[in-house]
Length: 301
Image (cartoon, rainbow, N blue to C red; front, side, top):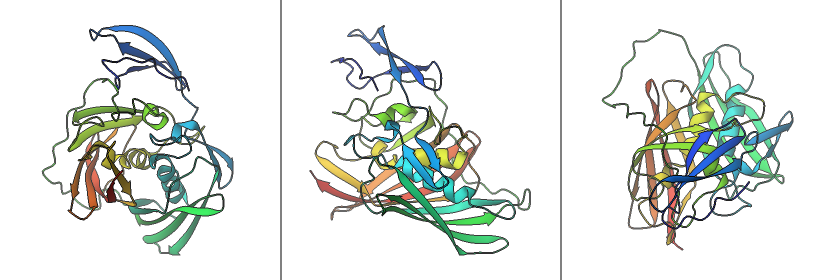
């Protein structure tokens, strides 16, 4: 992946326009804020390539902002969610809740996915999933899949108002981390806050590349691919001075998300003992689909 040229006035700003699934044209502002320079950024074909029935190889697009050897949590959590969603079923089941325990740093190495049924049933079932790398379980998940029946209940909504859908924006990331592969592989459009600022955030997001090479990305996977970034977009402390380690994520859904554009309204709260919590409202272009909660271990660097 090519590096962007330095731009002291706008160290974290890029304007993207899609040329194809693999090539992005990057237009960078000059010192007066005028677009004057164009470079090309090559993206991989997908976040993962399937190499066997239950085996996958990650591309560089999974890399997070902290180390080229470690994945951002979004892609591997989305891959595990894909395996849970597509596990053989009889009837029309949908994921109503998924909890993923993050047992440690996720290496950029080939992985294996294992799924088993914990509790079977004609209308309700519980699945367990594992994401392994180097023979070690890195992610542990449980998902409730419930049988869906169209129009069996009347929809009951809350007071959530769908945020405006903005046009293309400058892509700004964390201070000191002007860009990184996972961030570049997603498009971010904020209506409030951002990676570069402290406090709550509201953002629309879509992936520029598929989760798995040669396969469409389902709305649930699109949501999980984004939602692990909830604590990053709504952080309350300077990330250069503090570390925020998400140890889990739980997503509850009362409607199946429809992509490619999904979004979240994220808010982080902290106690005085180094333990935090990020919560989100998750939505797509038709409205709210559910919410998430993330536990955080917070310490000074």
